[in-house]
Amino acid sequence: DVELGIQVLDRLRQSTQSAIEIPRFDKSAYGGAGDHTTPENIIGADIILFEGWFVGTQPVDPAVFDRAPAPIITAVDRQFAIDMNASLQNYLPLWQRLDSLIVLYPADYRFSKQWRQQAEQEAIAAGAGGMSNEKVSEFVDYFWRALHPELFITPLMRNAELVDLVVEINSEHQLDRIYSPRDMRN
Image 1: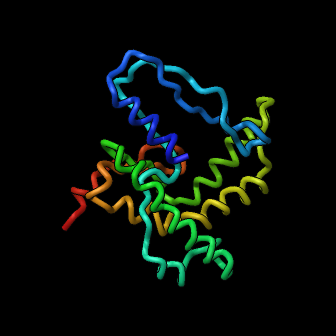
Image 2: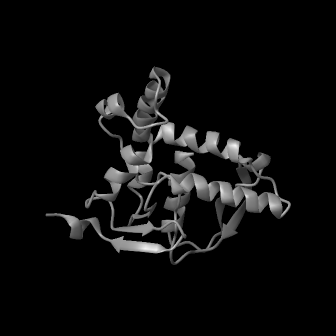
Image 3: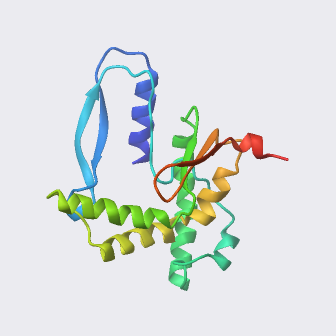
């Protein structure tokens, strides 16, 4: 909900003493598919962390989908990716509200599927709702078809005008490397 995101960030920027409703999301709802949950009311904030798997991503040249990586395989997959790429235009006003952009990125984007499977297994073991490994695979593949990390996140990590810091995470969930794209320019 781009408009809701803009409204919340704009309200947080105003130095007000009235309560601001912060949307929340519960990943365990609907068997691990997730849904909105009870918002939290806060008054004022010193630091606002706005996180999400594609925060800051920018539309790319549609020609990249002619040679896209899996799971963008079929003509239907390519059209879906092209449509999602075009929809990123709607998010640009939200990204413009960010004072700083830090990209957390696994050393290999495929770790994210493994990590999500582990998280779901842990949730199920703890008695919460969760997805099977097969459902996680389908779920993650859907998002990779929509905004494939190699096509959207990798270029973002190199964009010194948009990204302040990149934090690469290794397979053990530990910091592998921290750098600024500004320092990487030649």
